[in-house]
Image 1: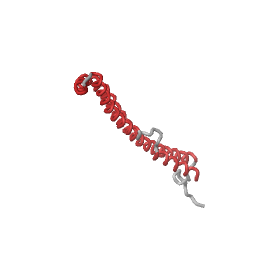
Image 2 (image 1 turned 90 degrees about the horizontal axis):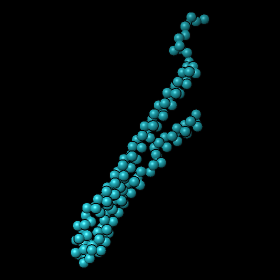
Image 3 (image 1 turned 30 degrees about the horizontal axis):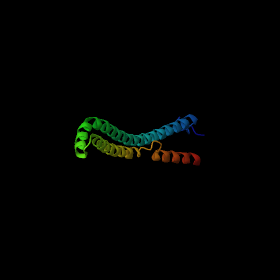
Image 4 (image 1 turned 90 degrees about the vertical axis):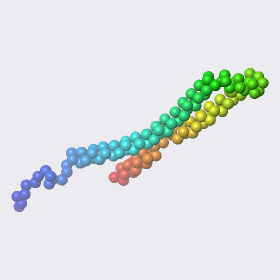
Length: 135
């Protein structure tokens, strides 16, 4: 017979220690997945911000340019085309082309946003699920 005294460190882990270990591992896993999600969301926010800024520029240019430059350009085009109506029409066509070009640039940037597409996050979650199924 042995006179050894067992200390708590010598005993195998009990249920509370095992559950605590699982809780810590799950917490670390969730924190990692949240960090990946935040990174992907940050990228989408950047594209959205640039796209909205370009759209704001397109709108501002369209409105301000029409208000400020219409009179001058209408007078110049009226002189060139021989009538006020033709001058105004030429101004509106010119402004439409500029506003349309800025709008197309904004839409090109907004197409990159894809609000529901988080490929890295979904792949990591799929791998986690596969690991749980194997366990």
